[in-house]
Image (tube, rainbow over all chains, first blue to last red; front, top):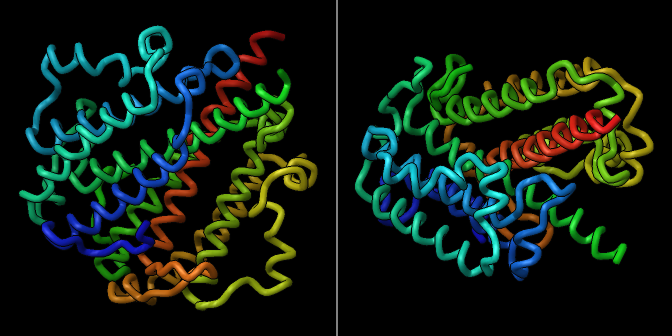
Length: 175
Length: 175
């Protein structure tokens, strides 16, 4: 793991630095879920929180959505929304529908989306980061922020994954 | 709240962008804890997790530690460690010792540390971000990474604060 935010071969300088942040964040997430069983990925703390599996799919979904917003300057189509709405919204449907899968399933989804991010990022330059857009509520963002938010959302959910793992361990000790 | 990563008046360009990230992250954290009572700040989910109050002190502590490492190129003194060890390590001592304080207490600690970060950041330029150092285990970091880690650590704990708040709400519903 590299503990430097630096330029990366194949990317414009600041895009490379952003990729350092995305890559580091992902490496820590993957280290946190390494070796989890399907049962552990499906664990619902308190009978209600999101499962670790659902949070991993959410991380992939958030990255996919930001590819569409930032690179295609549009919202999701109905068809894309059909595919991603459940992990995006989390909650009851995610608890029912995102389960019974091994870790490799989630890792493959994360990798597929990330590979596409890499190919998209290779083709933009630093100035692209400062292109602005507007959320539906009128608030202005730039694309640097959008991708900072991808990092931030993953990091926030990874913090949650850590709590869920500790609760899972505690529950297992009680058995 | 500004949803742009941009240069900031009074800071070197990339330092300003980093400050955008730090400021945005903090604004979201503060919005998440707004209005919490002392009892809520002291809540121990599962009788064991860290309290929200302890996590807020941890966020201040991590920022303080990174001021020392990144700006003074040294580790904490014994005296500094005495002051900050409990919120840094979290766990049992933090559960016992960080409590019975209102939200304003934590907000003041966060602000004091952040104000110092601002004054330190005003006096460095972009090239400072790429100065390298080594962790005790020999892994090389640069200062951009150190401050990215400050953002990351806060974000991860903020994700945990959100889970704790949901558990607290659920507990209150049961009463």
